[in-house]
Amino acid sequence: MVSFPGQTYGGSSFIEFLRADYPDLLPSLAGYDWSQVQIPHGTTVLSLVYADGALMAGDRLATEGYQVATRDIEKVYKIDETCTMAIAGAAGPAIEMMRIFRVELEMWQKLEGHDLTFEGKANRLSFLIRQNLPAAMQGMVVMPLFAGFDHEKDRGRIYKFDVTGGRYGETDYYATGSGGKDARSSLKKSFRDQLARDEAVDAAVEALIDAADEDRGTGGIDMRRHIYPTVKLITSAGVEDISDDEIIAAYDRVSKQRKAA
Amino acid sequence: MSAPFYVSPEQQTQDKAEFARKGIARGKPIVAFDFQDGVIMMAENRSGSLRKLGEIYDRIAFAGVGKFDEYENLRKQGVRYADLRGYQFSRDDVSASSLATEYSAALGHQFSQPYAKPIEVELLVCEVGHERNAYFQVQFDGSVRDRTSYVAIGGDFEKLEAGLKEDWKDGLSLQEAVSMGRKALTRALNGSGTLEAEALEVVLLDRRREGRKFRRLNTSEIQEIVQA
Image 1 (cartoon, one colour):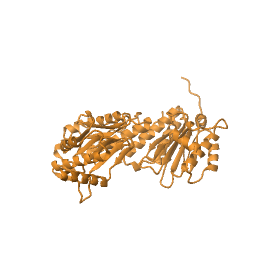
Image 2 (cartoon, rainbow over the protein chains, first blue to last red):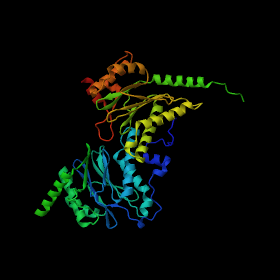
Image 3 (cartoon, helix red, strand yellow):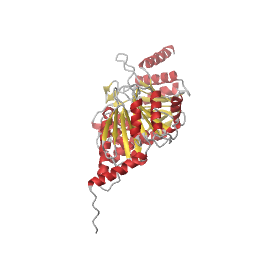
Image 4 (cartoon, helix red, strand yellow):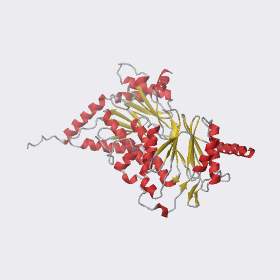
């Protein structure tokens, strides 16, 4: 068989390919005491299932200890046409994990000629998180959330993870990061089965406002700098970005309702 | 121990080339050419799962004729090569010319190995650009040809290219492009039947698409175009 220099691996997984032929390209952050340095951390991300699929949202603040690291960091990423990943915890390794995950799914699709199943995608992310366990034990914790549209089951689905790569399906909603608990409390009140699109966006924006109210690390809506939370919808048609104007409209609706109460 | 028979390098190379050409000529041809939205590639292929045309990266597609296992293996290596480069550098740093060079090196190396079987494939690497598209034709011995506008590879390619030369013009619509490709591939059948939609594999590199430009037309889409 003819082979390219630097390719002994013959399978369809990008992660396995790197491991076999380019181990130096795999992130390895183990073996350092990460409590000695400050790196940017993402704060609150949330996801919920609604009538047409799933919604994924996050605020835009990254913190370094007690300082603001970035005011407009992106924490919600489209991975492919069916799924998104949101990051909380150490931002640098989480973004790198997201990049590898993207290539992993794309390469599989191109080599095998079809998509991985939703379950299969979640499993690959589990695997990546497990790879990070030694670094997590030294303080470099990555806490992603995974949500998308499962075409086989014909509905939106959410997975949360623990540091060991443990994978848990959520049927309704979940939020993680420093303001995750506050966002969850908010979603607990607003969540119903089969929310419509606008209701789902309102619930997400309200939960992020609640989280920003209670948690110092979570960014609110910054009208002066025009920085708004990210909200993405994943439906059978693909991944859709909610525009800033729609977020502002949702914010207005939520504020009005609260004033009236 | 008896000494092996002496065979001159010229003779060896000629024998190998003849062997490879025979294998490739048995393969069904592939055509690729510019149309108004980018690049279109077409092949006669009755299998829905064993493909001759494939996606490599954002702007790059691949076609192979000859032995399936050999070009499929080369396609997969190309995908790994492109994905690795895109991850290591950036998505814009992956180009068809560097991939064609890589294919050329791999095939050339194999061809020059004294006791190795030459590869019985011919490849086409296409890239859609903003203004100009690129076509690299890589042959079994590693030689590369840089082509423009239209190209055919595989059995009877000379006849096909003569036909393409007559029919091809700038700014073909998708429908015109599909019917032109179908006409060319039908000509290669030498009068033994026509090609219905189920027998065609059609892929596009559509520059209007965001990110990954590759699109495979499904049978019903092809049917619609052919019947229109």
